[in-house]
Length: 406
Ligand SMILES: Nc1ncnc2c1ncn2[C@@H]1O[C@H](COP(=O)(O)OP(=O)(O)OP(=O)(O)O)[C@@H](O)[C@H]1O
Ligand SMILES: [Mg+2]
Image 1 (cartoon, rainbow, N blue to C red):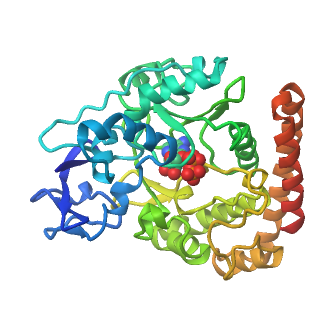
Image 2: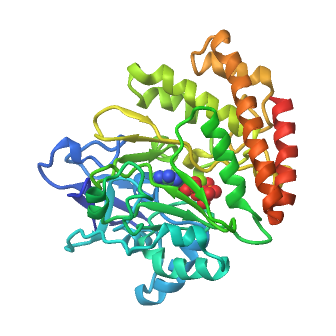
């Protein structure tokens, strides 16, 4: 049995149920603000899931190398290793406002310190990653296939933007996400993502602070769900908002699973502005040729589960076609996963984002300008980092192709 906490307070219990499923029950008489998801309001009846665990509880379960590390470290002691076991291991340190502990334990989130500056200046990339994976895996309640960990910066006020020294010292949970990459598989992925985020930032989109280590081995991203007082806001990705478990992250169409869903969960007052941002991000994803913009790579965040939500800042934008030349869209658009034409994108803007043609057209130019600025920076960086030259030149080709097409 696992105890579920929302905003640091006891919300209910999650347990195995039936042959392969689970059930979640809210504590008697708790307030509506303890709801674990916008999709699972407080109620007397249990919330049952016939297979696996509910999408909101599965949202931050590690995938890829991080999951494998945890399996190797814990499966012997546990005797089993399913999603519920994994949740009990990484449950104390999670993205967003939910935490998990074993049955009667109390909640204490205390992630070990690690200097971000040290990561940024590190020389021996491979060793640093295995050291960090070993130390931080069990504090990394975070999804995604790429190797990564969550760390707590030493509290150096200079590295924690927006936090006074007093506040940064009271933060007990993780403050940053550190993303690595595998040689020979996704070479220079951190620099690739860095320049895609650069383009997003130049489009005027909200982007958390992101830094590339000197040797290009790691991308360090500030958590955007961390609040100045050290608490965390709610976050739900579009798998959760569609009621899908992680395995369905490539299911459905952008029209319904993303744009229509956004309209359903956002308050009227900000819908138009958020849809415009989302459309811009979508354009950028197409133009940089990101074939991995699946449902877990978009999310909503909020301060109150029953209050207004807003789009989460941009994350995980990558030119995937440098690794997978035939890569296509992660979800369907207009019935196909082919890269959409300008005409198809315009019709998306008009029909799903409620933009007029006069509003939509300048967004194409803005994205093109942002990418051309980011491309210029990429060229300068590549000159100083010969190890990035090959990927940079492939990225520039892909961006040119993407821009031409869209
Ligand atoms: N800056 C951030 N602040 C808070 N949460 C974040 C941030 N960046 C990413 N996340 C969360 O962490 C998850 C994993 O991050 P990310 O998507 O960058 O990893 P990835 O391994 O590249 O993913 P994928 O499997 O899609 O390739 C995201 O789905 C999101 O829930
Ligand atoms: Mg991702």
